[in-house]
Length: 466
Image (tube, rainbow, N blue to C red; front, side, top):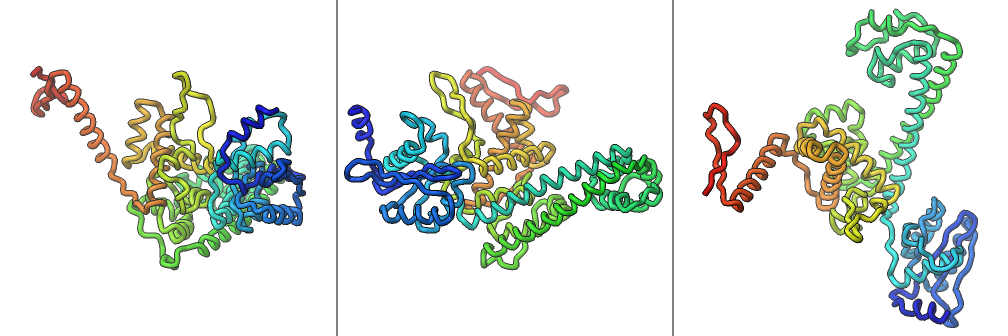
């Protein structure tokens, strides 16, 4: 017992007025600054709003300046917001930092261990954006959940049509487009004549009216029609909620917009084709709102759509001062190669430590990197060259990391993105390769001389001994 006390006393206390809280669904265990007699300063509180206020009052009476708590499910959110509003410094700790609790693991020991590690400065808080950003994040995450549900109901409609052998998916490329939804609503409304359904065809459809008639002939079984109508009603209900959330999100972005950019639209995109695609998908309003909010247009970066930019900004905000450098930001996203080595072997472990927000942003960046496979931009050329040497999976990972660096530079330092183009990248890569070959030849005692272009069988270079 004496040896344990000596080991604990050996830890240097840097901040004595701190507390540790072990969170639970029914009760919270709080450990305040140690008492003069050495007895544990631990109390338990309930989880109702009134009991959380009592916990905050007790921490204030104990002279606590900073609080460390474990990020357990969503139980930490009400207490975190309450303590933050009271002026406490709140440290949200990843559970992986606390898995090696000495002795038998109990709630009382957990909160004491939290307090002790926090007092010694051995805990690192997770990144949590400003309260204004968390409001945007909450709205956008629920919006994404609704979009996922909407996709599910579209799949149900598609399955009901397939069971009736009504091949709308062959007549149109998108079931939720203007022509596709018009046909689905007509079928749900009682229309069965393929000729009448074919009249709903848009002039932009590549298939002829005769082909539409052939594709839209089905067996019209009643149970499948009932399923189709049910899925359509659910789709419309969720779509109404999606529209409501999009409007609310744009209103919240407008309230947090920069005053000097109020009423201004986003500047014209340097890539007219991408701007046309953004307008075609109905994302121009979101793009303008994000520009007024962040004073930066992330869609200028190749591969990033307005939806991807919205996800990034609602998850991390515009203030990235919590990340001292772009390397810290990339590491938080889990897009940095793992370098932990012991005994000459890489240590196993999970990349990144940013939690749900980092996962969402990194997934968006990976999807953006995937969209660059056929791009004529410099990023697309770099991805294809990397894929030829290291494989597509590694190339997408590396390109997502480049996108993360560009996002950090644009939001943190206001550095604009200018695409140099595929040809410029290939020429720069050629010059870099040529410089490397010249250095290697010089070290070996040779000199590189360009081959004449008029030779019958020209080669890139020839090697002459010195």
